[in-house]
Length: 384
Image (cartoon, rainbow, N blue to C red; front, side, top):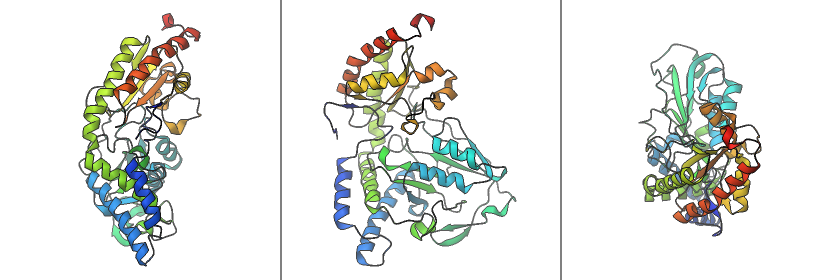
């Protein structure tokens, strides 16, 4: 689905355009599944059936059980839920994480056991696929803080381990094959709008019998794990995106078709644009196949973005959540320690609708834009 045929959209890592199938499913849902899904009457049951279909789809795609999936308003809420479950406990994250992890962990971490490790599997700015930490999964006899959790209304004793592992899989879903059990995860985060679903819907995987505290209290929804009236239409839209992901095995297309486009753009930038360097490792298995982060000597990232936007080419300077923040990318600062590299970076992120014509359009404009900015920059090429 290409909304504007004159526009080259290469910001899929921020938000993927809504799929036609999603729009149609949501329109039908507004007509047929308008009732409160928690109600006991038939319209309520019909709405709940559709919610459970979406829950089952996500569970199947990530190797989980349906009852281990909680629908949320998005990945940031899901991340906050996990971190705040471990309020007052040791929380370890990497400097590459999304702001909803870093800032929440900084506010709520303490020194009590058990310990939470929160590491994203794939970075949203560079696309880097990261090694998840090895953690000590042995039992401990520490604080009784998490003796009981609620799982679909039933009290269960947790396994009371020394440490638990959470990963933000928001960027990875649909781009690479995923199995939360094989990854050894206790918690995982997802967002619908990264795969062509609606904005405002996400999900949290919570492995059975692990610690859990609801972030939103005040209702029996989601087995008392997340209060609030179900966003039925949004969840159905999420389900439609998941169904397309499943039917088309999109991770295979990303690994071949999309990777080829990404790599071609990278090769041409390095060849045709002076002062360019990659912040993304193109080696298969080292990064997501759809993200390319590039730095340009003596050219400021936001200026590049604005000049490209004027030519109908949509890219990003990093995480959309940090828009308006003049600080250099915290991800690239952590990776390189070089503020000039971080300030001069641009992220191109592809989707299944991206084409070779998009790459041609970028390369018909980008060299000229970079040359213009380098010529007016106070930083000279020969100084670098």
